[in-house]
Image 1 (cartoon, rainbow, N blue to C red):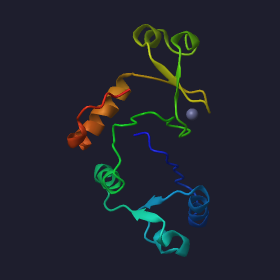
Image 2: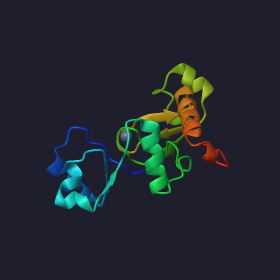
Image 3: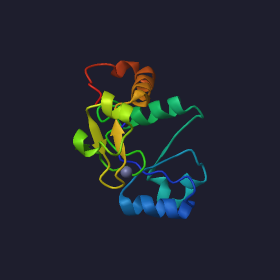
Image 4: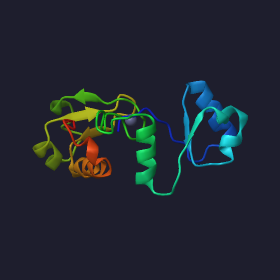
Length: 142
Ligand SMILES: [Zn+2]
């Protein structure tokens, strides 16, 4: 959804809390022990439930995020904003079928990963629209 987030599933609680404070980030968590830490008490949003769609609705609603406004504008690996890249510059780096069917490409300035509008993108967009049917308005997904 284009939100600036970090995810560290294996980080220790003390390090996570310190990193959030250092980077000015809010902690999204379901960890009841973590939120009892002094440094995390005022810097977290506690997510309820086990179903990711419900969790996503909670976060989107709490922070008034438009789930489609910045859809897939960040690198899925690095969290860095993607930049446009000319088709001529990716000819040697994408499969022939992709090159013959796609005209718009984006790249990650950090890792160099390439992105294009494949079927996976359409599936992800459909899922977001299914989770947030009220958001199916005027957004043109890039
Ligand atoms: Zn990247």
